[in-house]
Amino acid sequence: MGKFSAFNLKKQTIGCLAKQGLVDASPIQETIIPRALRGESLICQSPTGSGKTHAYLVPIIDRVDENLPRLQSVIVCPSRELARQVYEFARPFQKYYQHLKIRLLTSEAEKSDNLSGLSQAPQIVIGTPGRLKDLLSGEYALDLHGVKSLVLDEADMLMELGYFNDIDAVYSLMPKEVQVMVFSATLDEGLREKLSHYVSSDFIFEGGKDQTAPQVKHHLVDIKHKDPVEAVKNFLVIRNPYLCLVFSSRKEEVRRAYDALKEADFSVTMFSGDLDQRQRRQVIRLIKENRYQIIVSSDLLSRGIDIDDVSDVVSLDLPGDLEYYYHRAGRTGRFGKSGDSWVFYDSDHEEKAKALLQQGVPFDYYELKAGSLVIDPVGLAPKTKLKKKKAFSPEEQREVKIAKAKSHTDKVKPAYKKKMRWEVERVKNKYRRKAIQKSVNRTLHRKAAEQKKETK
Image 1 (cartoon, rainbow, N blue to C red):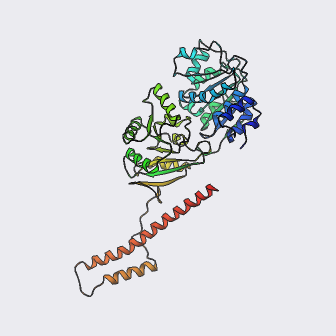
Image 2 (image 1 turned 60 degrees about the vertical axis):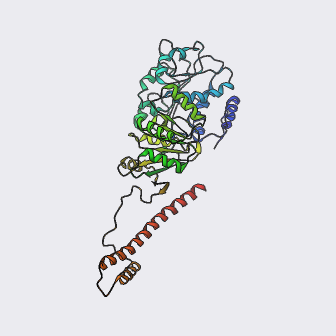
Image 3 (image 1 turned 90 degrees about the vertical axis):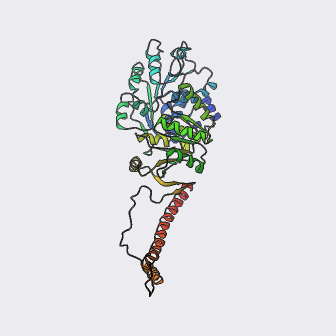
């Protein structure tokens, strides 16, 4: 892993990164930053938590002419929370560049507040597509002719939410030679085709086929038809995670889980579309201050938001669009740290879990029982029954004969045949238990071997 100091950055940039404890560059940053510093357009696909934000922020800030008071870079984000997060990442650099001006332009503030101070143009603006369109191409337009770089962050989400018409309006006003950098967690053919309108560069960085970081472990948990909310209460007591995100696809279930966990005295907060913008900002702030152990959320929190040190992610259900499972799981295992993603299911809700297995998610299997989380050696595999006419091994045949002999009597007594059947069944059950234990032992040995390989 290379160091930021190897990129020939300005001493102010290196100093700011070092102050934040950022000395070593991630693999994506090693690849992207040198090209971005040369002004190349590019597309970068990489899992969440791989360091995409600093991969574009560092070269943008390093290339800014802070003594030139005009707009030089535009960063487009699909949500207010993501835009604010990028803004918070960028703000520390202002202490090292005395004349650097960065503005956040989103609909969380009134348009008049966004306009305040724009008489002196910022060098960098970060915002959501609709508000950027209003302020950059409308009657209050800033001059875009000096823009050197345009960033489309979380491009797959921008496309899902239908924001490319607004982006087109802003892009059409920029210089033809503008550098365009696109960053996305996924990159399907439809998105590639759309991006070809903006990015003429042939360089596309694809960070592997894994849709979550390799250090994330995936687990399917059979909750045996328990209420998922009651199941998660039991799970949290057993697991006692450092910091856990609990996801549900439905706002009503998010509220129900939050209320139940709060009533049970867990350190918990909630994030969903039911909160207004002020409440959402406050929750994000308190989460980042490590005020809570558990966060119950809808899929609003599954995209892009950086929350440090999430140890566990629990899905009470699987989303209709399975792509969001990867975004959920991607909240843990970030920046080289390990993490666990747990998916609750029962025999009535196996279809989506099977679909993820077919997509290559390496699940292992657990059962949630009263007071314990135990390995399930079978999981979603078909439960095949033993044949009725199972052939006995010589050892089993010998024990069956002994059992029959012990229950035999010269005199006919009441229920003697039943007693004989009981003795034979006792022998059969003994060998069934042995077979099950062997299966469990094989699973445990396999997992131990895998863990041993990972620690090497």
